Amino acid sequence: MTAGDTPPVAGPVEDLGGGLLSIDTLTGGMTRVTAGYLLDAPRPALVEVGPALSVGSVIAALRARGMGPDDLAYVVLSHVHLDHAGGAGDVAAAFPRATVVVSEVGARHLVDPERLNASSRRVYGPLMDTVYGACTPIAADRVLGVADGDVLDLGGGRRLDLLYTPGHAKHHIAAFEADLGALFVGDSVGVLMPGMTAIRPATPPPDFDLELAFATIDRYAALDPAAVYLAHYGAVPSPQPSLAEASDRLRLWAETAEAALAEHDELDHVAETLAVRFADEVTPDPSDPDRGRRVELLTAARSNAAGLVRYFQRRQAPGPG
Ligand SMILES: [Zn+2]
Picture 1 (cartoon, helix red, strand yellow):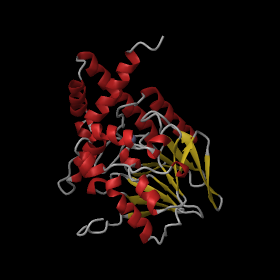
Picture 2 (cartoon, helix red, strand yellow):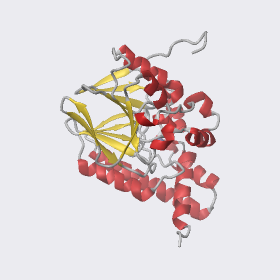
Picture 3 (tube, rainbow, N blue to C red):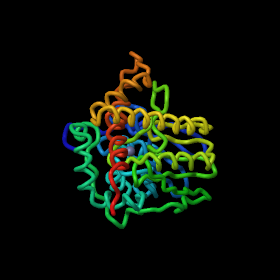
Picture 4 (cartoon, rainbow, N blue to C red):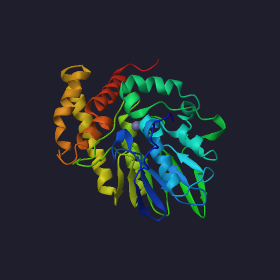
């Protein structure tokens, strides 16, 4: 911090019951964009941290709860996109006993984030400097790369089961707390923020995969959780209808993109078609000017179009051999 900087505002905390709290990461200076979730236990776990530029708000919220530097055991990241994991290096520095848990497929990006930061800068452009910020490296012995079926023992009988759930990204994981029936799904179900009338799939480049995304949602439905916790944003109780809706909306977005691609093999055309087709998913509200901004920031039609176009092109391309 340089002279003149004010200390970060603690993100609003919501008690969700059963020792589970949400911490608003205040991503992009807005509420209800990216949630962190804190599971209270002898070895507490924080699921998602949000971008580096706003992570001071998460650290301040943990401190305000009386958590000292030794009191956080795990930082669980659904995947390494910067709106979820960008602040992980800063949280690891503030809580030096915490282990950072991430898919074994994505772990190396946190130890050496140079490529992650460079590709993020290409994707986010100027937002890299205003909303996200760069991920700082984390010592390899503090990063735990996990696979499907791995378990985190939080103590006191509380555990987190980790599931490998690719689709949104090939390194995506979910975490399940069976006693609460709480399933933390990152971006793999989609995005539902204030003023949105439907769950919007999150299908970004570079490695969105439609079949895997459907399989992941089906797997969640089979787990029959009591609630699904979206990173963007919040709890979805009794989520079976929402999981079915997430699949339906994903199919609709994919079909719309594929049809547009058949008309004109151009990203601009696909993005414009999706933007027009799904414009009514956000109800404007003059008292909440952030409604449109949240969606544009996280799941713009253009980003979804780019991921879907890339997926369809990859599928058409002749495989090796
Ligand atoms: Zn993501």
